[in-house]
Amino acid sequence: MKLCEFEAVGRTNIFTGEFRLYKNMSELNEYIKEVDVFTAEQMQEYAKECVREAVILNSGGAVSDDMIQRAIDSVFTEDAKND
Image (cartoon, rainbow, N blue to C red):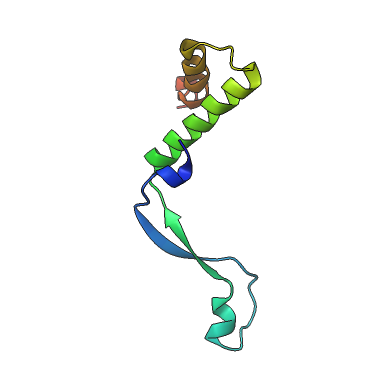
C-alpha cells in the first residue's frame, strides 16, 4: 500500500523556509506549502507496508507470510521493559 492510497484526514500549511524578515506576504507565501495530514494509525500501517516490502525485496521474494509478520511484529511491538 502506498501513502497516496490512504485518505488524508485533513490538510495543513507548513513553513519550509528560513526564519527571517519578509517584506510582504507574497514573499512569505513562497515558503508555505499545503500538505496532507494523516493519523498515527494510518502512518503505522504505511510503515508496516514499507517493512513488508523491504523484507520481500531483501529476500528475493522467497519468504513466507509468517516470516514477514514476525519481522513486522519485531519492529512494531512495544517492549514492555521500556515502560
